[in-house]
Length: 282
Length: 301
Image 1 (cartoon, one colour):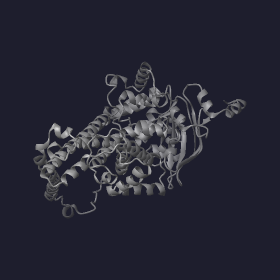
Image 2: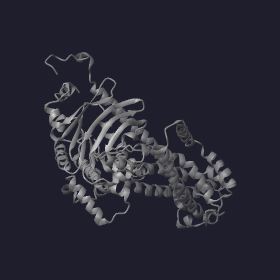
Image 3: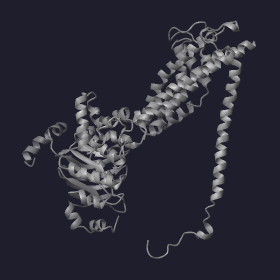
Image 4: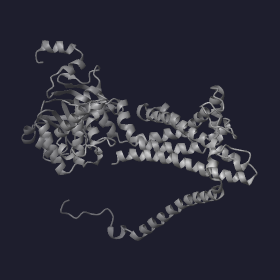
């Protein structure tokens, strides 16, 4: 799409159609001049950086810097809050996901999300939790196909061996770490191209955290991953790219620095980044 | 913490006294008070039941359940009232439950939060406190006269539905509000529409709470006499209603009728009727509670 002529023709087509016609490989995203608001309060200002395909991009920063708001802008969850709005663009393989012609439900199907606190559906079994997303779009799927999706998703989330004998048990009967992997399986079942993770391990113990981090390293071969974390060591362990956000007195988060993880952690360009990663601020 | 001694905000030696024994005493006193409060309710109910059973046990028989009312106390039974009450409860539940749940879903999940909706909310809470006879007058005006449904089963069920709708709506909203926002977010993040999120994820989680409210509401409806007398339920019915548009009576009315007669034999019949009414109420509630327990077992945390 670097050829200007091609991009002109592409731009004239329906955005939904262009979303559908992309090659099904890990997608790239780009955030352009993104600002986010809750009513009159500005939570994010003017954020621009690329999100590379099949890599882990970590968003770090102290509490209240807008990390969670930022990641919620990437799958249009932010706009569900009362009075919430954004300006700027968020591109998925060159298509603006905020284009008025695009259904936010379609965006959220392509860009999956895992939350801070594991939130399996308490009224559904492990099996049905995995299929919840599929059933939104296909109310009846043949049993063999459903079985296959469940096994594939649970394997991809490294949970299959632990739950294969109790797929009918309620999702809430699992341990915290298992619940979080169930939520990852649930997100993977609808075959997203990007996986957003909002502090996915902050409610978990170190062993469960280790399992999730291993899983992230595995998943990034096929998925583009954006992870919000307040844990610097975690960012250093798993991230390929790091975006550092910081909010000033007015509590509006701004991008201080974006670079490869190696650069950020060994040779940050900005003084604030260095102070944050060495624990002097935040 | 640095090496220097931390200075306490207050001098612990003099200011901070745990007063553990006092706290334990207060706790014990409070515990006794709650037991007393519970015992008052329980003993009252127990006394009522003992009294009613003593009076009414002798009349309980299949004849009493299967016979129609009669001028002769020895031949009188509660059949038409029992059947009327069962029909009335089922109809009321079928009408009020979907309406109440839908209204609760709209107010909690879809309605914008503005002055109009808070005005509506306030009024629903007020409606729950309106005396039931007022609903009877409303039912008389709307269902019996304007819609020309007459003194029928359906007119009674619609009237009782109006009466318990506010209770179901309030309970439904509380139950929906208790569903954690993380469940809704999980739904949206999977690409669910608002309606899908509500129907597939929020409503099932809220259902046990909604059912609790419905049980309470129906228990209230089963004992209502005033609104049904107002809309013209009969006190002497020697048949069971064959259609929705037939006249009817219900157990509280039959009991009221028997009690207001001078002969002691009818007072015994009234006591017997109360026992049957309690049994029906318990059966209805047991079914609803079993249903709720099954749902809750799925949702246990």
